[in-house]
Length: 79
Image (cartoon, rainbow, N blue to C red; front, side):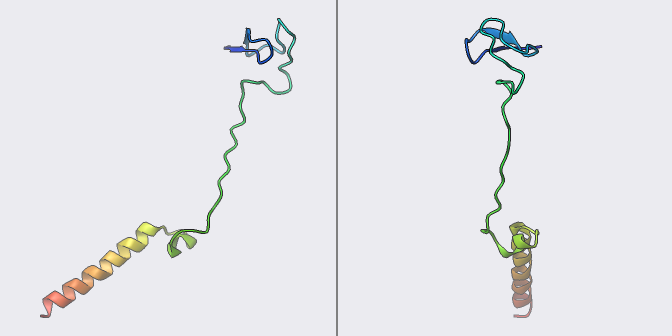
């Protein structure tokens, strides 16, 4: 059981109370101390091509580094 302030008169009221004992502000419909924590996530169209396939940009970077590393090794070993 916690004490919160009544939004109408400001006195401290138990979270279990159905209404404020001082001003009779009702707490039954929606308790004022309980906030709605709705999170909205919007997916943007920006990003690299791999994100479309749920692979992530880091995978593309790793593959490109591997390819450039192989090209570097091949060109240095045969010269």
